[in-house]
Length: 176
Ligand SMILES: CC(C)(COP(=O)(O)OP(=O)(O)OC[C@H]1O[C@@H](n2cnc3c(N)ncnc32)[C@H](O)[C@@H]1OP(=O)(O)O)[C@@H](O)C(=O)NCCC(=O)NCCS
Image (cartoon, rainbow, N blue to C red; front, side):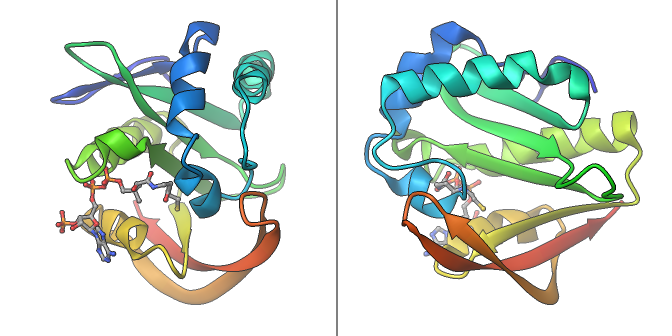
């Protein structure tokens, strides 16, 4: 999978340790943690640093490609997006994404995930790309619908570290 993905307004690039303060800032209000599975709340700066180091250290597994979403002009970190296999035997690739509260409502998540999907389709040649969103997060479902995903009718119970509780994720898929 390529290192760099460009869209009209964005550059998706590897996360750097210098992104940790901005990453931490975006996670302060808890909305990223509540709507993703593996980000605890609170999320201290050290957690952001460790996450970035672990993503970089495990890049050689070639099963989890995480990108910083950065503004093409200011280079500011707006969020993150990645494509990964849920387990080693999985045939599907799954995508995930988040943007910080300040970047919401401008089409950033859709543009970033769209760029990621185009690159993943070319580089990983998946038969299907999957994604999901918690049932109380319809904005993420809308992002996926705009990208051509449809609901599979299945759900997954995921433990959400930001809620300290299980929550139901609605499964979606994109045939590529
Ligand atoms: C959900 C999230 C990814 C959306 O990011 P974004 O950059 O604002 O998304 P976009 O602007 O590309 O698109 C959002 C769409 O949802 C719609 N939307 C917003 N709130 C909504 C709601 N409560 N119900 C239904 N649709 C909603 C918007 O109107 C827009 O659709 P439109 O273009 O047809 O008007 C972002 O808020 C986020 O990162 N949240 C926290 C983490 C998260 O939820 N990650 C996804 C995990 S599955």
